Length: 250
Length: 258
Image (cartoon, rainbow over all chains, first blue to last red; front, side, top):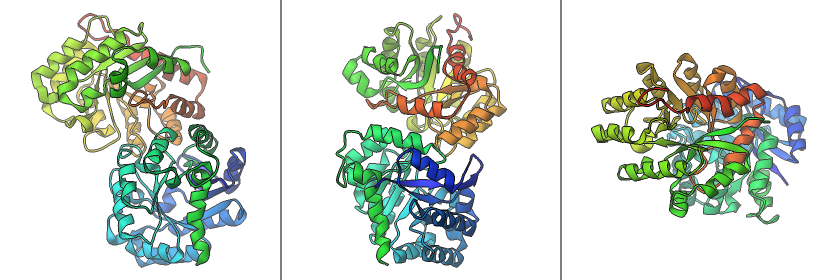
């Protein structure tokens, strides 16, 4: 099954994408499922609005869209309650964007939100690459401190922390490398270093084109075996689906 | 999409290429050919990483470009810590009548654009008509605002943001629209940023690049694909891929600005 790990719906300064529009894009690219998150503004401040937007999109296309959720840790107990509510309504992944949300991934401010993710058995997706508070080794140190959680290193530290990504991922087995914005040729080299079974495909739509990114990735990984966790089956969806399904047991 | 010569304005004569091919551009140019590109601005690599390698890397870049039949335009580097020697190196590299540029990667090379020792280098570039290209998008020394601040202090020199702020600082590259003497290379930001930069930066100030040559991987197809996906009209594509680089990197007159 093909799964896109990084898509957003909603209206942002540079884009506007509805759930219907996203599913059309997926149809055109032969992508079966996508994890959706909310636009930047809703990651930063209007968390409830963003989570509701994403949950509604997933309700409209329950067989195609998987909702994530987010809350800014600066909202304290309110953020924790918002996450608990979103997970109860079906959210499958916690998304944190330290640069956008104004905290460092190393800051204990995040700890209460991680308890909610652990309780929901949901993976934690971190937008990495911005130089302050969202770098690969910050993910690695978090992953070591929280072995009970699966950590998805969004964008593999792109751009200028690309060197760090494989070394950081090697520190903890519960880190997975996500490809959006990382460029397929760089993502491939990371996977060669840490194992394709830890690679997760994401398009970054609508910041990039879902159709274009999937076509480029399929070309870049054309020599991988079709089956298995280290093959196309794993990188293009199976690995991520395995992480998301851990929450089914809760 | 083209009836004009395509320019890639951000490539490197990378360490691995130099180790394997010496100063023979044949294989490197074949990659350019496979994407229908005619010209490239060729930046150094080893000289950006090691001060001791600057002179020999500049020589290698000059030589490989000289063997390209005019297709590869060299960009040289130096280091402000080398003071007078750095300015002498700029003058040594700039041959009258030969198109060229300077390239700096301040966070990698480890110097601040506010360092007074950088001023004579910029003044030499201005005098010799050499555009000055920067890695940009990353603190501590390579933010777009730092380059644009330099451009304001040196209004007669020409500067290029080599990465348009990359993924996380591309909005700062929009500030290039506020000054005359800064060009912006679409090489690093995502597709949505390409579109916004294409809408808000003057067409005459846009370039495109792939970062090809750092290693053996070929990023040109992907990055050219992003440019195509941006949906720019043919006139703007011709500006970005041909007219602007042709104008910016034309040969300086003997001993003076282009």
